Length: 218
View 1 (cartoon, rainbow, N blue to C red):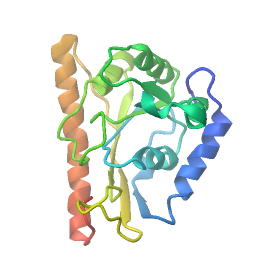
View 2: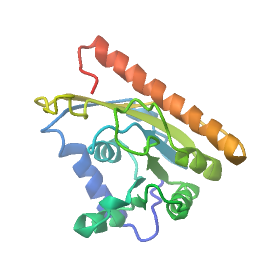
View 3: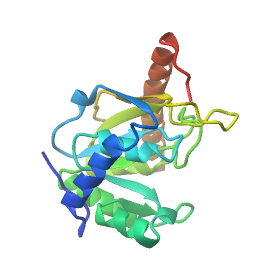
View 4: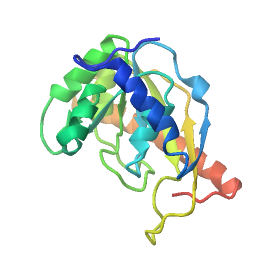
């Protein structure tokens, strides 16, 4: 099982963080994970997930059964917390700036057979993947990595801002798939839309399942 991470990262420290992410949220949420056996045990893997809450990255990193390096907003990489994120191999990204450094770092991890995670929506929202940025498609084109979609529901606060008592949270691992992203901006745009559609469909499938079983969508 590949544990490739950015240079200077501490794999043991990441494993400790993954264990914490797997268990410390359980007192606040009733977490159920579906399809974790679909995760390829090795090889370059690009993980894409919807994003509607600050706890989503912790859930994905904790529930993913292999080490991963996630691209995260640079604002998180300050103070002790920022040093910890760098130490466990997470990659800072400055939103609104043209900077290939984080993407190049991520490609290096993928080409070494590791797993990289990204939230294609680019920021927190309703988590329905109505739009996506080009970073995920660029990484697929540059690395040839297999794509693994993950849908998360139940972490977002309701519209009234009041957190429900131990809400049900579902993490659904989709089927991994390979795709080819064509050259130029057109290829990148088409690849971005394909990734967005695949992830949005998985989120909708989870929403439908939750609705059938009486769980709220947020």
